Image 1 (cartoon, rainbow, N blue to C red):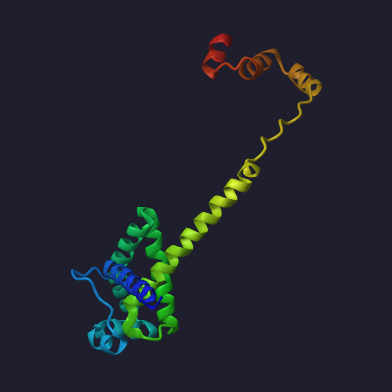
Image 2 (image 1 turned 60 degrees about the vertical axis):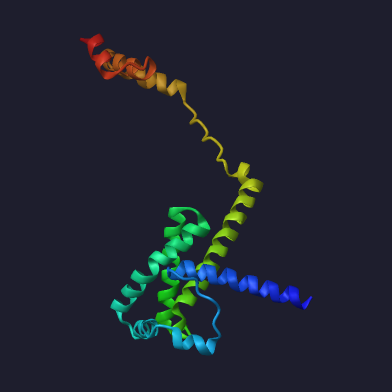
Amino acid sequence: AGGAVEWRVAMLRTRLAREEHELLGTDTLRVHVPDDLEADLVEPREADLARRIAEGDGEAEAEVCRRMGPRIRLYGLRHLRSPSAADDLVQQVLLKLIESLRAGRLRERDKLVQFVLGTCRMTVLDLRRTARRQERLLEEFGADLVPAPPAEPAIDHERLAGCVQALKERERSVVVQTFHEEHSSAQVARALG
C-alpha cells in the first residue's frame, strides 16, 4: 500500500509541475524542489513587485499584469478550451491577485507564480462547477423558464367603430386602408390621389 501512495504522490507532483511549467512559460520543466532550496532559486524581482504592490505602487501592478496575463491566458486556453473563457480567467485571476497583494494576504511574496497557478486552478474548478450546476438547473427547470406569450389586448369593437365613423371620409379611408387593408403609405397616396 505504501508504494501505491508514493506513486500517486509522484504522479500528482508531476502533474503540478507540468501545470506550473505551462504557467511559467519556461523551456524546461520545473521539478519539485524542497522549500529550503527553492528560496535560493526564486527571482527576487517577484518578491519586490509583491512588496511594491502592497505599498500601493501602480506601476508594479501593471508589471505583474503584463507578466502574468499571457501565462494565465495560456492556462485558460489549455483547461477551458475557449478564448473568451480564457480571457475571463485572466481578468478574474489578475483581480484576485492584485486584491490579495494590495491587502498583504500573500504570506510568501517570493511564491507569486505559485500563487497565480493555484488561483488559476481554483478558478477553473469553480467555473466548471458553476457550468455543471447551470446545466443541471437548465435541464430540470428549462421548460419553466420559457415565458408565456403576452395576452392580446382586448379590443372594444363598438368604441373603435364609433371613432372611425366620427372621422371625415378621407381620414377614415386612410385609416381603413392603412390598418385594415395593410396598404403602404405610397399605395394609400395613389388611391386617394
